Length: 303
Image (cartoon, rainbow, N blue to C red; front, side, top):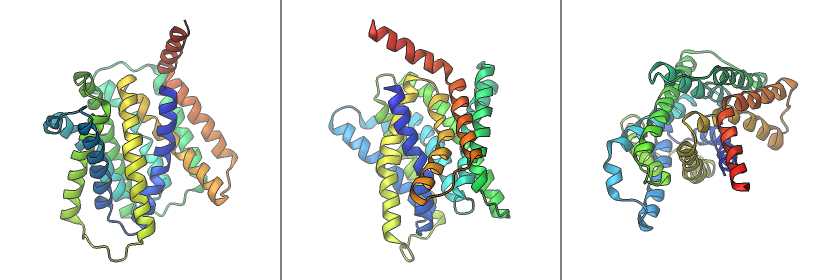
């Protein structure tokens, strides 16, 4: 189940960069789009859990949910949505792939957790693979806003990494709380923060919107990008470690390249294929412990 959940999560997350770009280019204000996405997804999931008696309203008032929402949802996606106005989705994918490396650094420096050499090597190999996958089709026009967009994405990934580490600690405390409920609560908090930021900084006018791509992007991101993929992310974190689920950030660029080749007939070079091979190699090295754990569980279940 861990392997299946990880695969589904990666496939969905791999398409969200493009979906965000479609929505922004269709005229949706970035913060408004992100706020509606996460608040709606969180509210739907939380109400569904409440109706089935699996969560209490009091979960929403816990400061832990507020802090996770501020880091993993508000900090990460306010940065990404704003930056994708000025940088390409390829640049966004490369810079977002620094997330797992930031987790390794934060674990070592702040939490004083020993990180194996093979994990560090795996991170570096996968990141190099991401660069090789995206680089052939990358066109960069450097400007002040482009540089600002790159820095903002990196800041967002720092929020994402810190939120992921904190989420794991919170899950250890809230062991009896369903991960779906935890995900819903943090998305509600992240969503209202994004809506508040939008109300302060963006005009709420539908003039100039391209409704079909805008609404299609929003619905896809609510249902698949948030309700399904983020729930799988928290489910995997509960059962593994903070690093393993975040490695989807290495897999999203190959998925984007594959979609381009499949849907638009875009050329796939040997450099890209070599990059995919490096990404897979790095993931295997990073997650060697998880792979052994899954294999042990298979042996036990078979016995």
